[in-house]
Length: 457
Image (cartoon, rainbow, N blue to C red; front, side, top):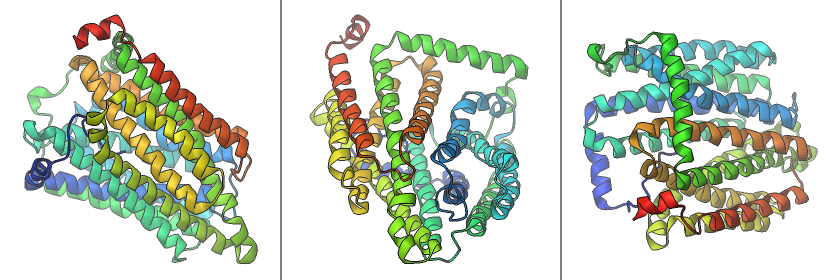
């Protein structure tokens, strides 16, 4: 997701001027180039994996297998996230960024070869897991390097700009891969998806070489006197203890805790909807086409439709970045969050129950407006409510809960929905759950607790 825009900030010409000033800096542009080429490659690689799971006529993966695929893609971000800093504080970051993507370029090739051959067993899962897990290390390295290429007063908008452009490039990678399949430039069999995944090696290779070419040794830090000297084992133990102390601090910040519970519960339901949409587009909407035309043509049509889903979701997230600051200014975060979560329940019923592809595109757009709006407000609340010394650890806790609940929702849907994803009772239950979640948050935040009241005074 795009980096959050602070809810009390309204986009103005000054923000645009700040973005232009940041882009005017050559070091930032070079680091941005390293990031964007890598995130386009992320889109290509993950499109190859998803296409093979969802749209390969030779291999109709079960819903549980699809959920497991998402778990492989997402969980390394959360489980490894708190610990990558231990290495980044010891190694030259220019070398870390370069070597990380050169390693991914090398690992993509055997993964793509196994995808091409149809041997998607343990060896393939290990290769894919390594490629995705390294991405967490790479993104953390970019964040740690940013203060070395941007002035301190511009760090917040620079981080927002880099994250937003990175998300756009990732979506471009997904969409171009889907378009290539939809136009039948490559087939919808294992060979086609293997070829798509293999193209990611080129993006990772270019990104790795750019990092080595654009920056000098130690230019991105850490400087010699800043490098961690604690033994690696001790540092890992300290990180674990830090996560525990961060969770304890969160218990004392009920406002931040409640809003994180809201988001985690929302992500569980969002995971249910995500798998339902994927199954509908790959198993239900394409079914008629497969009866009339060849099976591969039906799969290509479904992949093209899923590309439109990606664009609809990205457009909804972009709109949220614009309207959320205005909405919070006009009302407040409590009213806005309660309203959009309840509205998602209505949207799911109105646009989902007909089970018509164009209406689902509208639903995806509106649901992602709510999702990104919540992400913006949650991150800003954590930044405001929690002490600075605990924020990094609490964001790690939040990130872990965010992805674990989403994956849990995927597996719940996989075990309860029919193979084609069409379930009116399931959709009604999910919509009702959104409304009940909104009601819980409204009443739970009706009165601030004593510690919150003291901080607000």
